[in-house]
Image (tube, rainbow, N blue to C red; front, top):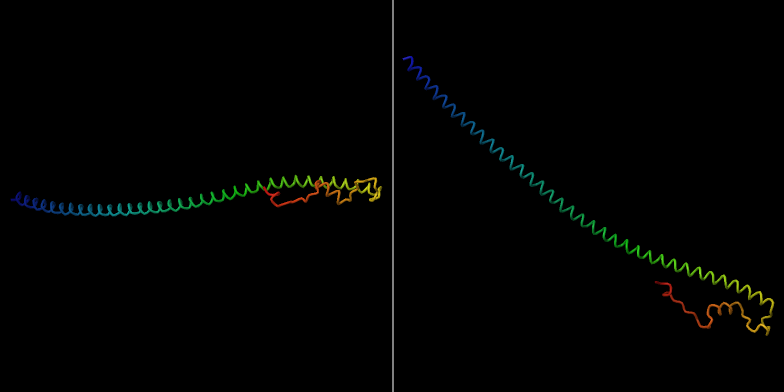
Amino acid sequence: MASSSGTSSGSSSLIQNSGSEEDLQALMDQRKRKRMLSNRESARRSRMRKQKHLDDLTGQVAQLTKDNHQIVTSVNITTQHYLNIEAENSILRAQVGELSHRLQSLDEIISFLNASNAVVLGTDNNHDSSDSMSGNCFTTAEHIESFFNPLNQPIMASAHAFQY
């Protein structure tokens, strides 16, 4: 009898153990499902964060590309202005050189005329202006005019002569 009672108490404990084992298994399955759901939700949030970061970076690339294009356009315009001004400066430098050369030539002519006037005035002092021996006695104004305009024709000057 003792063995039957032992068996019955043993079988009831097996039934209890298997019942609590099933409960434990169900509890573990439930925790596992919760963990899986939690992991899925966490992975979904992580993918959303990555997508948002990628979208932000894509927007930043578009903005920087636009800014870069504007800067390149601005640099090209500035470079063109620089080249235009440099060309204009080159022309002006050439004009300054030419005008300096002309001024030097005119200064030499004036020096020559001043020296000629001194000679003419010196001979005028020695001769009477109405003296018939000299024949070709010029006043200073007539001498200068004959030097600049040997054919006694008017000299025409225009602004175009000084432009290149």
